[in-house]
Image (cartoon, rainbow, N blue to C red; front, top):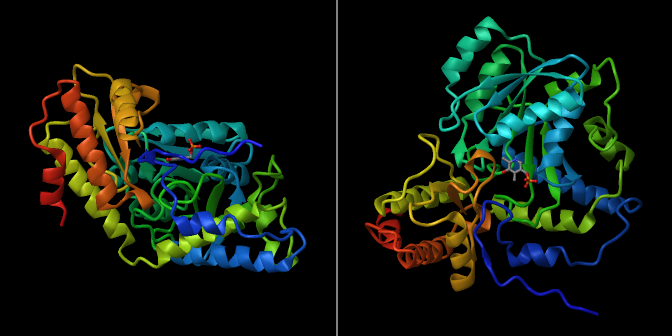
Length: 383
Ligand SMILES: *Cc1c(COP(=O)(O)O)cnc(C)c1O
């Protein structure tokens, strides 16, 4: 039998990220039959409750088997009925992508298109809604990972709520690394993924569902056009001790420990903030240019590929010479920018300094002028 080769790279990408040993160990413990053994239902519920604590919500949290995208599709599938108008807040690649899910389930997406380099201006949104607020729900991305920009979803959620519009939030790459108080922000369905800040391997999606969203689903006139993506199927899992499909038990054991790791750290968001801010200062002092004009993310930094070198040259050299994996981007940003993922387990001084030093050496190798050594200004600015 062949053996699996252990990963020798430092994965400093904006998800998946490095996974702590206690999470990896939890994924290897002996498992029961999660369909029949009710002790698993308790484990599942405890994990969901811990996530609810982390996200400050009194609503329900569900863990579904599938990557982050599944949560986004579930939200749209479960809320949309034929002809529903849905406001798709579009200031980035993921924001735009929601329109497809809305259409797929018969909704009518109305794009609210804004500059991809700037966060959503909440007052501008309010003015727009004063003229037109006939929407069943609105979709918005918390942290647009390809561009490294974070929208103030709590402020957006409050405005939408004033106009009686439900909100669906893609917080996949933000959850845990940015402020997120679901109840206070009046947010309705908030999606997360196991492989981003949460720092477990990919495979699970998290959906937090408000009481309002649950009522909206229950009062549908037509059935949800999906089984796997129907959130109503999870509603009575605890009472019935029954899941719509067999739960990936090892993934959930791992997730529980990952969430416990997060809850054990009161300064979690602050750690992300400090690292992100020092990384940005280091790169800009060195002469690199950040993508985006405001709303810089706590979890990922995106900078333009300098002249005289390509993204692939930098990424390959970093990988081969320093065993560090960074990421390029996609869509309209393909080839133009490079992304450093400093989320979850990646957001620590040692790893980030290692990345910055390797990046510095790499740029020198390609004859790119760097005005100030990144690690020096990182240290000077890390407070
Ligand atoms: C990672 C991520 C997802 C999940 O998408 P994958 O491409 O399947 O990893 C969804 N939304 C955002 C903003 C993400 O960063």
